[in-house]
Every structure is written in C-alpha cells, then in structure tokens.
Image (tube, rainbow, N blue to C red; front, side, top):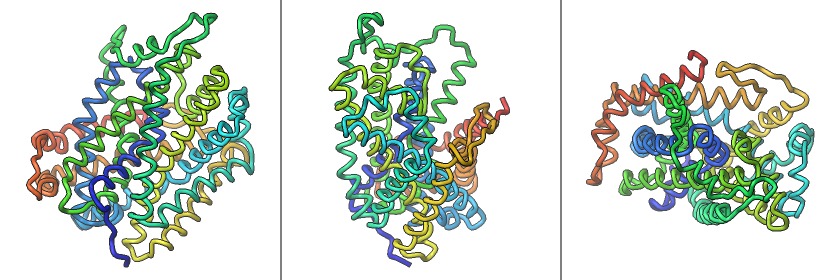
Length: 460
C-alpha cells in the first residue's frame, strides 16, 4: 500500500477543500434559489444554516478523516466496525456523480472554447445548446478531454497534483469571480426594455422579500437552503473525509473549517452578484426563473450577445471561471474514489486509470442519454428527467441525506460528539461553537435531514 500523502500545510488544505466546495452548484443553483426564494430572505437563512448545520457536517467529516487517516471508504469502519457500511455509501455517492459531472464539465469546456474563439454570438442562438448535447461525437469528445484533465491532476498525487493545482487555480478563480461581479453591477439595459439597472437586480437579490410569504414558503426556503449546502460545501460525498485524511495533525482544524465556510459562502454570494443583476438587466424577472443548464448555457450566452464585443470577452472570462470551478470540484470527486482504491491496496496510478476508464464508459452513456438512450422518467420529487437527472437525483436527493443521517447517528449517539470535539481541539484550539455542535449533531441536524429526505422522496 502506498504511503499516505498529506497537504504541506493548512493553506493547501483550505484551497483544495474550497476548490471542491466552489463548483457548479454555487454558480447555477445558488442564484436561482435566491431569486426564487425572496432574495435576501434566502441569503439570511442560508448564512444561518451555513454557520450551524453546514459547520456541523463539515467539521465532522474533516475530523473523521484526520482522526482515521483513511479515505471515506474505510474511515467509518475504522471508527466503528459495525458502521463500515457508511464508508461504502460514502464511496458510492462520488462514483455516481463523477460520470455526469464530467459530462457537464465537457459542456462548460465547449462554451469556453466557443467564446475564446470569438464565436459567442453563435452560442446565444436558439437551439445551440440543444443541438450540441443531442449530438453524438462532440459531447463525448469534450467529456473525454475534461475527464483527462481531471485524471491528470489525480495521477500526479496530493501535493504535485491537487495542492499545486489548487494554489494556482483558486486565486485566479476568486479574482475572476470578483471582477465579473463588479462589472455586472455597472450594467444597464437598453431603453426599449425600460432601462433596467444592475442595482435594481441587486436589490432583488439582497433585500429580503416577505411579500405574500406564509409559513410554508419560509419552510420551503429553509429546505432549499439546506439542500444547497450539500452542493456548496461538498459534505456527504466522501470528499471532506478524504481531504481531512491528508490534513496534518498539528494544523488548526477549526480555523481551517471556518476558512472553508467563509470562502464557500463568499463565492456563493458573489455568484449571485455576478448573475442575478445581469440576468435582470437583459432578461427581466422572467429570466431569473431559470436554473441549472438553462441558466448557464442559454440565459448567460444571450446576455453576453447583447453586450457587443465586450460581451464575447466577458463570456470567455466567465466560462473560463466556470471551467476552473468545475475542474476543482471534479478533481475532489475523483480523489474520493481513487483514495478508497489506494487504501484497499491499489497504486495511485492504477486507481486513477481504473476509475478513469469506468468514468469514461459511464459518462459516454450519459452523453448518449440525449439521443440513443433518450427517455423521460418522472422522479419522486415531481421533476421529469433522463439518465443524467436520475443519477443526480439518486446521489444528491437520496444517498447524500442518508449518509449524513447515518453520520449524525454514529457521531451523535454511538461514539458521542466528544470524539470529534477532542480531535478538533487536540492541539489546544478553542472550540467556540462546542455546545452548538453537540446540539446540532445529536438532535437538530438529523431531524432536518430526515425532513429533507422525505421532501426529496415526495412524501410531502
């Protein structure tokens, strides 16, 4: 078995973990949910949940990883032999996510190259996105290239691959996000559409709107914000346990978790500043109703096309930023899988090639889900989807809440919260939210997760 690597310091860990957290969920899901759920009303609830619910799950997983020095596959079994099944569940989640994330990463790569080559206007045309994803060879080629980029970093290892890449891409990513967000706030729409301004769009984003909001609306906002946290901070995916296993014993775990929280929340907020004012200026309030691929690959190109030459440049920068975010997240997903293989005796090279081949086969099936294998299936949460949507629903809406519930029971009731608290404070660190952590892991978090799971299953 290979000797377990470790990040060179807390900066490397924080940047890698933040890179995992800052992904497509922040960019195409957070702004949509904020617009849908009353702007500032969603933001306030999200921040409160990030500081409580999100902190609890993030601290737990990183501490489990550092304590056991094992990947997600074997860490739970090392904590308690009878709970090793959680490790398999934690490994299945990234295994399901990896193929379709590579497909979406390939879409982002395609759009980045389209705008870089000066053909952004074509991407704004009706049917461009649909024609691309329903094609046969092109989506598979872009998917393969994106997968190859991801596998190359994993192949190079924790220090030369993940850490080195994070130290380069993450600062660039942050600068691009801030730059686009600032530019977005200067936009003003054409007079024929009423001359809508970015500041009007920003107001819809940050000012809480309780107009006509009843108790059910607030509860749904809480559920949306909690579901978004899974996307945002990469918990219940095996990633933070795996990254925690590379975290040095003498580094400040609590401080690093706080920094990851801050970076992720800041990027999620700035994603809204980038997108919501721009969408409002050029597409109006109806434009804010799009989420997922519709927002990223249809609405945003239409906006850039209305900016003239500057729009093509901004589009290239925007999709490069999204590409970096997708790549850093996909790297963490693949590492969670490969690390488990390594802990079971494989070399890193063999694990990378093995998972790379499996992911390529499955991601090709996902690509063909828009033509050869196309079908529609109504999911329990009310949405209708095909292969990619089914994989996303199964991993994010079913398996991740189940894993998080199991983790809360294991730590809160079987091993007791002291297990994590002792790991987090073993260098004399002050755990300022100790009481909150105990209450959350034992009572509040599992109850909230059960409610979230039941909602995903269409029970209410």
